[in-house]
Length: 279
Ligand SMILES: Nc1ncnc2c1ncn2[C@@H]1O[C@H](COP(=O)(O)OP(=O)(O)OP(=O)(O)O)[C@@H](O)[C@H]1O
Ligand SMILES: [Mg+2]
Image (cartoon, rainbow, N blue to C red; front, side, top):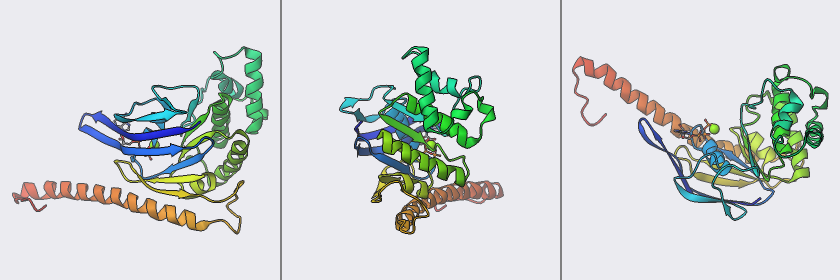
């Protein structure tokens, strides 16, 4: 599925006034493309995924999915959240079948769920309950459940952020294998430059809030990609980390400045010192 994000701005109304989360963002994504979003916390990455999912509506601008305006959620666009959001009262295979409940009869549903559990190497655990699984296994169940819906677009919001580096590495390998087969369009949010370079066709670095696309880096490397490959293009990772650090430093400086000016007010005003306009 092709996606066209055209001049999209998102403002949220809060108790303290309006927050501009995403500012005039435009982006074209080809069918079958794997795009990673990286950017400092609060720059609007999740907001952008929610807009594409149809869970939020843009304040201005348009999102097209294969030329049709996105006006709400649809089975063609599925989100995988950071917290795997599985149902603890259902076992593994029931979790995978859940989304198919209204679409087909139980035998067919069961067959499809088993095929996807096999794809993520969880066949042995189909009867286990969620609390009996490791973090990596939960991520696999969430992936199987999303893939079983056969979406055209997968929206993955830091799906592996809570995992240790080894488990994450194994899931990267599995994810690459799966997407070489399924060729879905993927939007994947991460804070990890290595993860982005390993997985993406294109990495988009966002500015600090309000989020805008700051840089686009195309990863010219065939798949499957392996991080211990001696030809691994480490330069991509460095470039992304530098761009990212610039934005994170902006956020930190803003926070330190705000805290410092608050502290000055607290410390000096009781002493009867006029703060004037220079502070
Ligand atoms: N429903 C909402 N109501 C009000 N403000 C919101 C809402 N959702 C997000 N925001 C604000 O919009 C901004 C962007 O939030 P968003 O969750 O998209 O950031 P993010 O880039 O995903 O951050 P992180 O990396 O920490 O997950 C933040 O300042 C956040 O407080
Ligand atoms: Mg987020």
